[in-house]
Length: 253
Image (cartoon, rainbow, N blue to C red; front, side, top):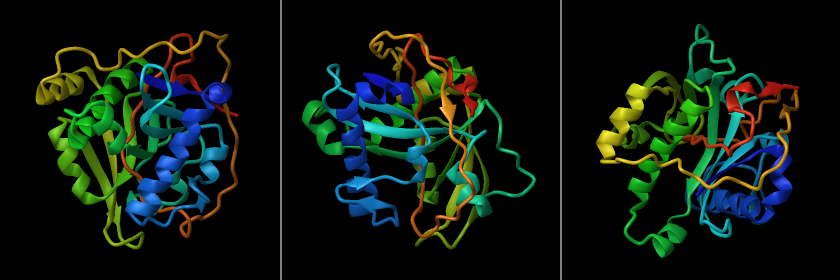
């Protein structure tokens, strides 16, 4: 199932959050060798202190994590503007309630192969993109932005996604870093489902524990250049539980 864990729900899913920071460390620091902030077995940075939303792909009992992604509104601090500003031109205005940034996406291919042996990691990645489009549409999001390495375009195309590459820049690592804007629309969703032969909605996630809707407030953060800690960001996935405020209505506090 998919869970969108909002700040007021962190205490309900401590094990999933713990697994997500450990997974991020294994993927981004250990496997990819990116220059990310690591403390012990965890990969965390300053943006994790700003009450972001975390999209979790897990089993039906919320015990085993398969994948995760961090979601930040572009109306607040983002890696896009604070770290990767040189990857898109000054004429681009990517700040709006309907534009969200997705970072730190990663999939636990070991857990997936154990519980879903017929699902290959590459297809799992593509299916998450479909789920992204489905749930983003229901939350009033029309654009998802991300920084990625050039070779990721192959997977985006395979999934049927369409993105506009706004720019790219060197100086962040071995490869250039691109900035892309992904369209979220019914047309794109239909195209993605056809590309992957998906006939049923993927975002039929289980509702999380009912509770009163709590407004989400994102703390303000003074600009700090953290290039020595933060490196490359990849795709984004969005989901929400019934009763929670749509992502596009979240306000910066």
